Image 1 (cartoon, one colour):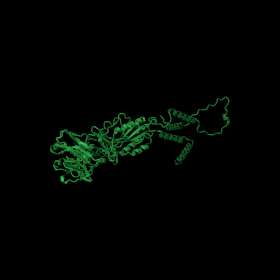
Image 2 (cartoon, helix red, strand yellow):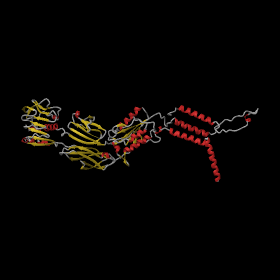
Image 3 (tube, one colour):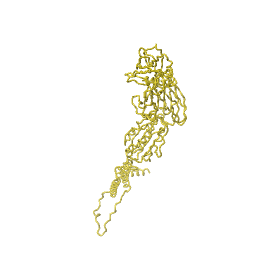
Image 4 (tube, helix red, strand yellow):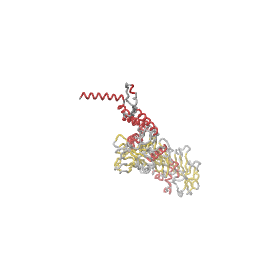
Length: 636
């Protein structure tokens, strides 16, 4: 019951004090010296002995006040604890919501945020916690992070609360509650609360598994948040398939509110207006709108939503559009019409057709020599088509209608090529070296081979036949083979680039590659992020704003993770959860120490007893009373 005294010790001490006090009160408190005759002490013979009268307590009220005052002081020394012993320490975990939504404006407080309300709630709850109880603060967004140790010094907890700020991700409430439960289990204490302080906005994925079933005591300090908000979910850009040097910018918007809203979506390119769309959204729904952007140069595309609302963080997003590079291809051929359809079909190819007499060895991209051997070989990358005599890869012989066509497996140049019955009229059989890449072979030997220079800067392909001559031009393998060759020569130009602005946190997207080992997830700082690949999807996580590139095969996706991660619905607390700041009669407050009040009350009672019954003070009161009576009689 008591921290410093057991029940037996308390009763023994109080009994001793009471006995001494009563014994003293049995004495005559007002003794006076008197001169009397000695004969008064002689007893007359024959008379009975005088009987001495028992002493009695002269001032019982004074004795009771003193006993009461000492009782209260003794209870204060024993540190009486309301509701049980103060030895039973309790450990509480305070979870403050630090999700991105906490930076929204608080209702009715234009200059305040939801985080300000959460801080005020946390401090009010902490005031109700007994000083002997320990508290640990956890900041919770996508990750649950302890911000303090177990502290009985609540000033440190208050300091950590005031330093808490909102993050970039949505809260994983289920994980945070489970983490708090594990922390309490490790201490072995009982009766402590797990307190969640926030608006209770969660994702749809975790709405069914937020609260573990064995939480001891859960308290919900709900933060009132705005009910209406419209924000950007993502902004993406992809090269247009319909127009050269153009982008399609796709904007996805969500209405989080309960009423329909009409907003204006604007697009600026390089700080210049590039588009305006008016979009009407139904309650709790999403909608998409697309802006065509014509630009070949790199630039910053900015998307904004008007009018502004209580949460400004999701009203703006920007993405960096890279420069659209193209491959300059110079074709030396007497039959340019055979090559023109295939080379002009891709906007990333800038073909130029020249006659053989106009040959020059200058090469700023790729040179295609169609059945032509120039006197001086061109610089840089070169594609040789059925060379008539000499070529970088020697020609062994020429054959007509070869059989047994085979494509090299697991090679970029032969990706997607499976046809074995192509009717090749005639072809050159090549004499390859050890380091050459055999792309296609027939029974007599290789017919397509590739070579890379030792420094890796120059690439060469020699084809023993023209893929666009005769009936081959109608085969699907011909343009597919040319596309593979162009991609092999200039992978940076033909890499499909998607640029997306979305929220931080967990990113999941479709993986476009047959070789997961070739996937890289890299930040702008050059950091390789860990990732998972499952069921054809790639998943990685970042807890703060970042720019991440996912490179797989010939596809590069750039994620500008600058938008705040948002919620989908409101959390439904389990049955029996406590709510709000503890009242005066709450179980949390019943553990409050009473000794300061008992000490003060005991001292006050002893002071009152002294004023009423003390000798000097009693005499003073008599003088004052007589003086007052004298003044009253004169006045009468």
